[in-house]
Image (cartoon, rainbow over all chains, first blue to last red; front, side, top):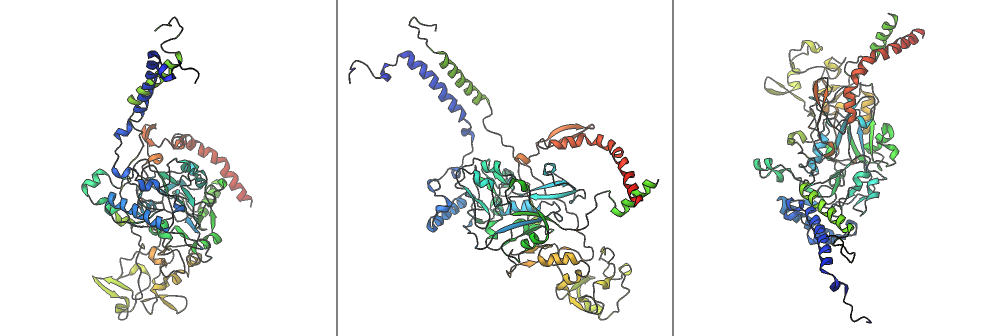
Length: 352
Length: 252
């Protein structure tokens, strides 16, 4: 008002000042551009881009029936465009009066890894890069120190008499640390105890992966692929053959890059009364699944009558996954003879 | 570029530092690797027949049959006509494909009914059909039978709900071969390949041989190198213990 002679600051910039600010700004822009360079090499497909519908989608718990139907229709359409299969996509709700519990008999497990691969097949996990919910640890007999567990055992036959086998997957904890750390509530516990993830809400921060003491959560570092390029050349229909068309919103529908995923006790099967895929394939019947609120169920009988333990009890996660043993004569390790024979030998040695 | 008379420099020191930092970043981004390398590998493909949820074995129905010389016959079609030989399995003339490896249970008529070969023998003169095989096994395997009845042993297919008609609890002989009940050893399916489970193999020298060790499993390296000494120490460690124990036993 009072200073009509003074010019605005922008216009007052000298040539020198303009140059020096310009140089600093230009180097900054160049640095940002160089940092974004990898995007040029990224193999982005049309389906990788988020559609406006998906972007505006509400949180799973806020969707009413009609909106859910529209979401399922959109996802089905996307799957159909992308993989040329017709999915039976549903949104299965928890059953009333049901709380799922898993029990695994360590005396029976032989470490054949069939559950691992049956799970991959059922739940449409990425084949390339490899992603598996179940990992089987081979541990020396006489300890349950999972630090000594070996994932990479390769033997002509299992079980090895000196080792026992311990499959680990999501424990569906009653006090789940992964749910607590999620900054966007993309993961939560359902009324039947299953901890689920909304893949459309997950931002991929991986906090839950870090919070889980069982390493049960997996991250999609890249767009899941269901066959290698070589396999596609050999059989162009291979993806259609491999994908399980029976899908549900919260479990095994195809995931996209940058989201977490994990075992859901095959909720698309178990919530309609069926058994999880890992249990069905187990050749030794080491896996038991059922409703812990039903006193006649197999898992209730196990919890009542067997020696059970949970993994990392001291973390206070209250898992719904129990390991148990059969009380029977311990199997002999290789080179070990019967206990009675050993004692006699020892006696003989003492006398000599 | 030196200080001008007015004391203003072309570039102040802080601006030079910022510009150098930015230029450094440009060089770093351009020369560095363009993308983050995620260690990854394919899941080995498993043939579908490996992953069929079927019972291990198929059991005899109420009409048990056997194959002899290419013919499928019901048991009593022969056993009605011919008298049964000695019950010891070692001198069988028929059914010679049967390998009997069931511990001390090495007599045919412990399990098979002597009068009616299409039934199984229970205690006394009672007999049961083949479909109720669990009651036969219960004669010796009481605790296992109890566990199986409650669903703690064995395998159920179809449904987790015990009241559901879909639930099918497999019977003893749907998993175990009654003539040789011990489980066969299986070849394991391939193990994990990827990410933190990846076998990022480091070669270490161990007794002149090259071994592959997962770097995330450092204890394995220790385990591979230290046991040599441990082995030498073992007899010494055990030696004092063993006599002490035997003395105790001797005292008792």
